[in-house]
Amino acid sequence: MRALIVDDEAPARAKLRLLLGAEGDVDVVGEASTGREAVAAIKRSRPDVVFLDIQMPGLDGFAVLETIGATDAPYIVFVTADDTQAIKAFEVGAVDYLLKPFTPTRFQQVVDRARNRLVAPDVDVPRAAAGAAPSVLRRLLVVDNGRAVFLAVERIDRVDAERNYVYVQSGGERHRLRATLASIADRLDPAQFLRVNRATVVRLDAVQSMTEWTHGDFKIVMKDGAELIWSRRYRAAAERLFSVGG
Image 1 (cartoon, rainbow, N blue to C red):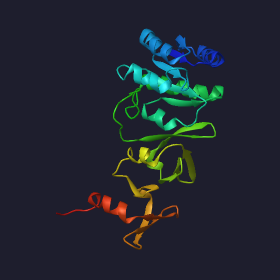
Image 2: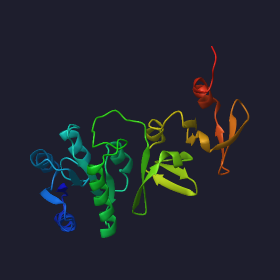
Image 3: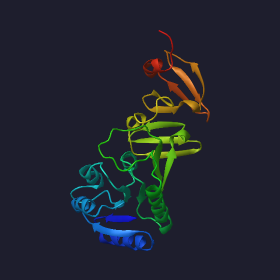
Image 4: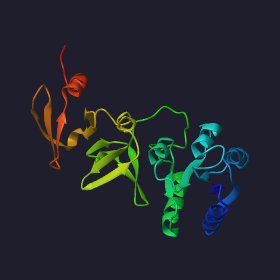
């Protein structure tokens, strides 16, 4: 596996170089300390995977992807201390999102994931495709207390918006993401998910019951006991999805 290291901090590059050097099948083909150096190195060395920092002088990590384009783009592992860009990283097809500081065990998981992707690419999470049209979201990258996981959308019960964050409810777990509700709702399968009011999207199979409420609203009871309002405005917009006839 041909790997390129991109980080503006020399100690961070050294740590990655040391860890990758311990992998018998990894060849570090270069390093870069700025976004522009990264673009040149990617074009020159044609790595399989790039361990890419997000916050760098000049071009940040996402701008690097936009510059190189989607054709034959390498797999990307974002390595960053910024825990607010997970959604965007997932949207551009990142293999993983490695938060600093990280342990050798966590790093090994990332390398194994990249290695597996090279052997058997996952059609649901393609190589970085900057500028590509958003696709239906199948997994959501969530980060809690330094631990990042890919949450299958089938496990999501609902998504609630609160100020600058959204909260993803999955069984007994609640994950906070810095994102807008619209950015997630627009990528969820409308056959499985429904926006019921300004602040909430629900998974239809997680709804237990609905009853008429007031002023054309419906009251929704979720299987976890949560009670929500399906507002008249959003119910009218969704009627064509659930109606038959002329």
